[in-house]
Length: 153
Image 1 (spheres, rainbow, N blue to C red):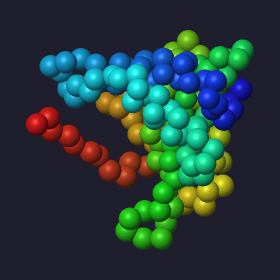
Image 2: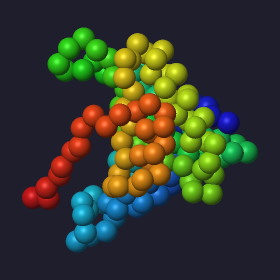
Image 3: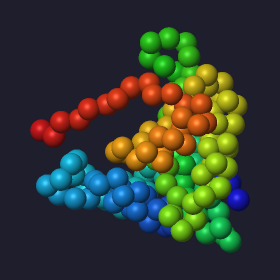
């Protein structure tokens, strides 16, 4: 079941965010882009996205028997170059043991949320060059819009 996130999901959400962080390669010092995982930052990200006062935030949970096994966090905003609203995924992670159709249901719920906010575009990101993620996005009608480059300083 896909449902909105709740305060009671916080501890599990932090675990999922840590797993996502590690899978993205951020935890490997000396390789790629090292970003330390800090529990308080992860909690802040989760709370900011499920806060009911933030009407432009999305927090979707893949619930399996009452336990969060996936998160999709996103924000809606007006594009800085013109009067067009866009949604952008902040993080999307599903525990590997609970993937499959859950990914499709989460994307369906995210896209419906974005449309309900008046967004003309929904954005998703992919860390690295995972061909399965790119294939999923392309199959659903997403197009490559930008490619970002980062340099460690």
